[in-house]
Every structure is written in structure tokens, then in C-alpha cells.
Image (cartoon, rainbow, N blue to C red; front, side, top):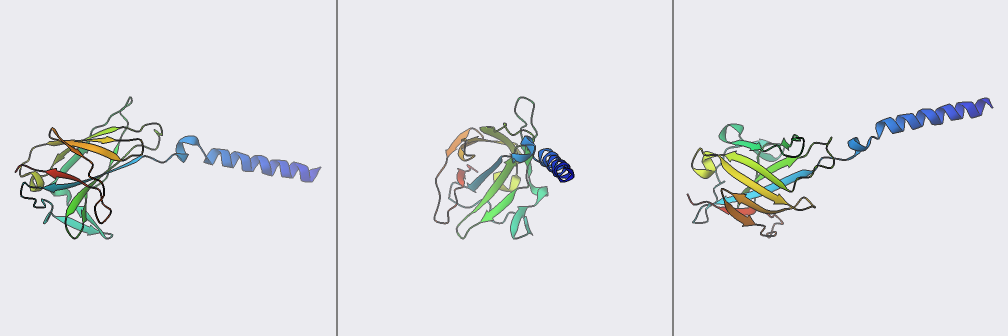
Length: 172
């Protein structure tokens, strides 16, 4: 009888610990959105070559003082989207920027199909104007198209290296 009571107390304790540690909201990770964009001028020159960056854990983090990037907060309750630093990805033939955004973990049902970023970078655009980047996403969190300053760009598929950045042609 004494062993049964001890066993029952152990099972009850273990059950309460497991239930308190496995909440539904905590078990669903945030959704991550990764947007990759190449910028070229009319002659096909890579506008990202020579941009200032910092080597950080084998990654190329764009220096914070040369750009400003924000993401519009959207949703019923204006969920806080997280915006990560801007990174440069380099290949042998071109460079591209990685815009990374994620949803809050406390909003597991929040998965926007459209994100709006405001981006200022004189090095790329040749001006200090605010440029609007609207990205459209499918249910698999893959970007299907982007609109930058009113121009629409569609996904190009992957290249020889397995990358799939959007190619944005700048007039300047």
C-alpha cells in the first residue's frame, strides 16, 4: 500500500511537471521569412560589390550605419515582427542581400502572406530616399514575388549554386 502511494505521488508529480513545461504556445516556433535580393544597374553591374560589411562568424553583416531598414507591424493586434540585421551573401559571380524577418512565438497562428519593409541605402540606390519593398509569401514561407518602388519582380528559380535571389534592376 505504501509503495502504491509513493508510486502515485511520483506519477502525479511527473505529470504536473510535464504539463507545465509543454504549453501549446511554447511548442510552436516562430515563422521565419528569408528574402534574398540582388541589385544590378542597367548595364548588369552588381550594385552590392564594395558595400561595407563586418565579418561575423563567417557571415558578412552589413554595417548598420550605411542603411536603415524597418518592417511594418501588421495583423489584428499589431504583432511585433522581428527584423534581423542585414547580411550580404557572396558567390563567385554576384552578391545578394538577405532580409530576415520572423513572427512572434506567442502568436502561432500569425503567418502573414505579405511583408512590407522600408529600406534606405544610398550605396545601393544612389539616394537617401525611402524605398518600399513588398514581398508576397505562400503557405510554405517561400517568397513568390516582390514589389520595389512600384516595380514587380517574380521568383527566378535557383541558379547553379542553388541560390534563388530576386534580381532587381535599378534605373540609376
